[in-house]
Length: 325
Image 1: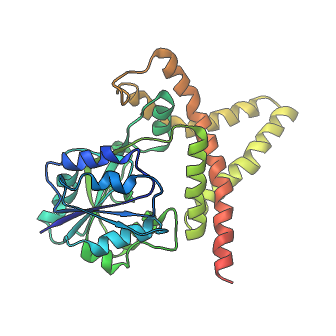
Image 2: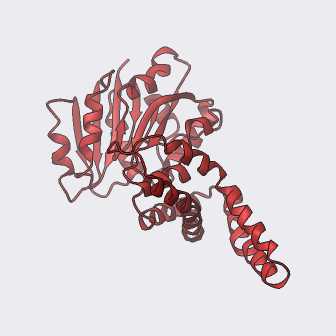
Image 3: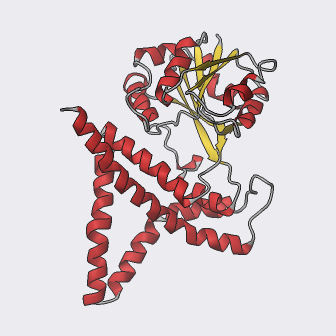
């Protein structure tokens, strides 16, 4: 049973080598490694091809291919029975490929394996970002978890059976792929030790753009209607109402609003406390001042992310409605 490892890339020349080095370090080497480049304008392709003497490597260049198209092209070209899928910008644990493919290698009735991902923060801000927006392994219910395609393994026959990734969608494409696989092959196997480390967004601006695009993808794909409705109700109805009641009736209404915000930050603060015990990418632990700063950042990140989602979602909905005309 052969294993193909695939990924898509676009302008990753400055960051692709750690991923390639981590593939070389795998305890179970892949039988082939396929990259599809979406038409990078930097030296991404040259950086990858420099590893041709150390990896069973193939690179295809398809200018204009989005991430869904790139993954589909890579998997279609793969010769492996098992497809291990990851993404640019990550670093794989040495046991990642062995762990994420083990259920597929040992159990012919399993078709999909969910791996996991973990933040690799380089600063106090990135540590706070990871704690706020990324689940911990202990938060995961394997029965309902929808894996990211930065850490996923499928049989090639399963990819083919569900029609691959939706090429009409630019963001949230892996969720639709998960839904299609789940409908046919639920439950997925769970491999929590198959970890892909990736760096959280380094600034609020980059985070805002990321979540705007994610939410726009939700609107295009008609995902999470209730979640988005609750968010709009919270910020556009409940929050203004509490502010008004606090000014007109009693300041305790403001306290109620602050307690509500604190409740939404409870899980991030629990993750943050654990994250303080782990060093940053350079091996340094946060200072007490930096820790205090991360405490203040959590609600800011939460609100900025919600604002990005509220702006992106209707743009995606409008796109979807226009496609129906």
